Image 1 (cartoon, one colour):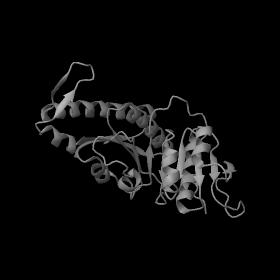
Image 2 (tube, helix red, strand yellow; image 1 turned 90 degrees about the vertical axis):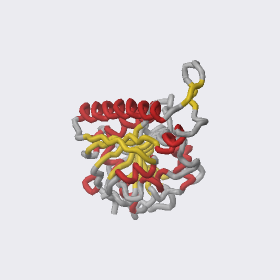
Image 3 (spheres, one colour; image 1 turned 135 degrees about the horizontal axis):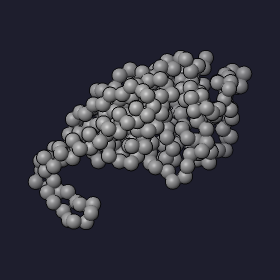
Image 4 (cartoon, rainbow, N blue to C red; image 1 turned 135 degrees about the vertical axis):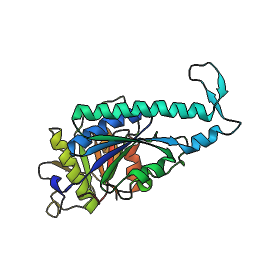
Length: 269
């Protein structure tokens, strides 16, 4: 059975922040989703322990972005920088929540990015994190979904700031799995709050009589000769909602498009 909007539970939207433009754009989207899903917003800023440890080494240097040269990078300087960035992130979270009249909280932690997000996350949280967060020290090719969201309702990410505006509808991918049921339910709920009709892309050999996800949505079967990423790249959805059991190749190809992607687990509801 397809999950209906009332079956979908997201208790908090946890957004991990740094000072990048992608992170701030993600905050706005995360706050929008918290409003849509009637949940609270939790901002998290992590002082990266690996970078702090690096500043203790004699080789630590800072290259000025203004072209004024290279200088020693000290722990004191990095800690001051983190305090400033955390204060700015707190203000941004509080402002985003106030505009939408939703509850919010903010935490600053010190440690390794993935571990600290995992420590703060609770069951039924939706975790929002941009690939820029922890990029300097995160292992190349690491899977954020597997690392950060083992007990969460989903993982929201924004892989970059696109110059082309996303004008298409909220689009969910349906694979006839429990996670796909939850993805369709969340997509329908978000689209309804945004005043639009969601689109559902049916993948594989799904009989229309076997499953009828979200009857109010626009349905289409992905043509066999078209990849999911190619289709989504043309239709430019403002939000792509994927089931967590989608193949890694498809999920990674979709993420590279740069549109906001929400990966939903079967734990929603």
